[in-house]
Image (cartoon, rainbow, N blue to C red; front, top):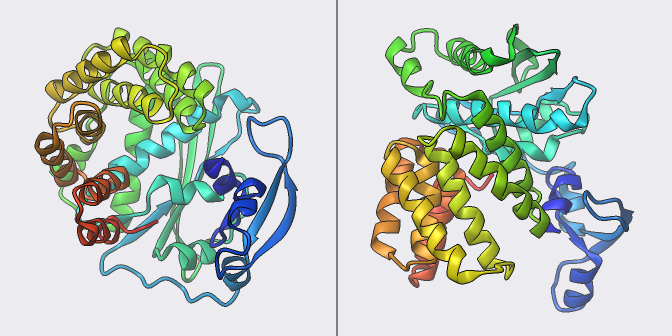
Length: 359
């Protein structure tokens, strides 16, 4: 529910459901305003929604977030022009891969996907996005997939001035998708740092898999997981298993698959713990074994080892290694903070949240 409300909330606001409001009414100094009954994805009945007055009323007068001391960018959700809502997962996957590639540049501050996702499906003012997220540049674009071909357009804008820094269109066959993603990423990086060494660009263009079919199943699985529901996790499992069947070396898919079982356990949705928990551990270890340079496999594998096997030292080592590989990996900072909190070090948890840049 929290995930759904985050998706419909205006940037800079805090929304809660009517059920939560009933629990906390009169117990907090914060005042909440009723904003009506809202249609929420995957629920048939509208949900009563309340907004924190301090957050909802402060937006217009809120100070702009300070810019980091290095180039900063937010990649907004690409508009799906396919005319087919079923292709939404593919458009989101393209954006996620671009964010991941950009995040590997240590000199570049990249806003996490969850923050930029708040602007999905909403009219956006680039200057406002820059102020709210504290970034110098905003990348926006469109995605179209039809008749076996793909078209990606992108434009890079300097948020403070609205100046158009770069824009281009990329066309190719569906099997060229990875190459198109690389072209978008390289062009953006080239616009930000024309003198960037070619070797560094090649380093960030590592593919999670060479199999487009495996990649498509992986993206569909992620789409199910991102719904945050029991049904979504059930839907994700066979898709992720299909991904590793098509590419047995797909380390990221092993890590995400292992974490899916952990999410089921954490939410009380596990049906057969005697089978699922050993399977989660097997998948986590396999993903780490396949590629110790894959931050996704390391981070999610670490979560499973930590949460299920209580291998605390191994878990922390892997999460720190994931952050060495991708210092902008928000989920990894989240896991590191959880580890510190679990170990009774709230200051460490705070440091992790600050280092991970809360957005």
